[in-house]
Length: 347
Ligand code: HEC
Ligand code: HEC
Image (cartoon, rainbow, N blue to C red; front, side, top):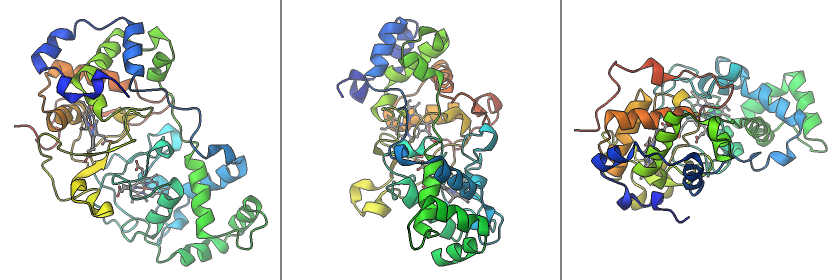
């Protein structure tokens, strides 16, 4: 991918970028620049071609099934809420599990997750199906003792026995933990969102307002696309958090726990920025409460740039055009404007 936008050294100093803001290129030119680094979300997720309506329906039932937790209190949807067009999150910095205990990481959205290069903040699960097997048995999440206990519990529910037999025909043990994960993954592969930014990329000049186009230009010029690129505006590489200036909380060591490679210390999956205005709070520890705060911290930590309030507002305005149509999560850009916005990463 050859683009000046990918080279942080060429990112302009704040003052210069500020003076350039006024000169947003014409829509066609801006689209051309954007398409060098970002493409529309593909029509379907990898693997979706084999998903049948029956399997997707079973997966959806399981995604909302509280009996998959030890005390029948928690489903996948408790932490990744997708009912009623919600944005796949719970808006908690870290999520309480079935027994109320919290883990150390923020719940990412399940929307579009099947497009990611891997699952979890550190990429430790390769596929959605691998991922789905984790939370059910995690003692501080859904807390089931063992996979056989989950299978036994579901086997006592005749509608599940029937649904598994129907959707995994010819198998000796259709109701297995592997098949449960496969079904949930099939449902998750339907969680694809569409937004106005894609309409713009596909040729509709009017899909983005003048202010949003200006924000897109700023986003590209400042150098955010060094890491946030591709169809999801991220989610296709791992990078260190605090690449230029340190991230204040170093408790979570990131991907080094997976690879055991020194170079992966504090390295995390670059998150997708699709629907980002609807998934606060931000970062792996949920420390940034608002999107403007996350944007200015990113510029400082990852690019060594102090953005003006105007630049932050402009980029944030663009990022809100990445809200999926029909997705109605909490928009914290509007909600958190004046109150304190999380820990200070910037001096
Ligand atoms: C108690 C809250 C909780 C429950 C219940 C829960 N999750 Fe999660 N989920 C999380 C957290 C926290 C992470 C991030 C953990 C990490 O990166 O180590 C996560 C990560 C994920 C991811 C990866 C997304 C990404 O961007 O990498 C997917 C997909 C996912 N969960 C799906 C599910 C499914 C399916 C279920 C039900 C079987 C489920 N989750 C149950 C909290 C929860
Ligand atoms: C050098 C790579 C890099 C650059 C450049 C970069 N980011 Fe990030 N971004 C990341 C990584 C890695 C994370 C995850 C950090 C974490 O939580 O540990 C992240 C997280 C974020 C988040 C929070 C996502 C979430 O779901 O919590 C936002 C918002 C964001 N970046 C926006 C931006 C903007 C806007 C810019 C440009 C000003 C930018 N980033 C530049 C790598 C980068």
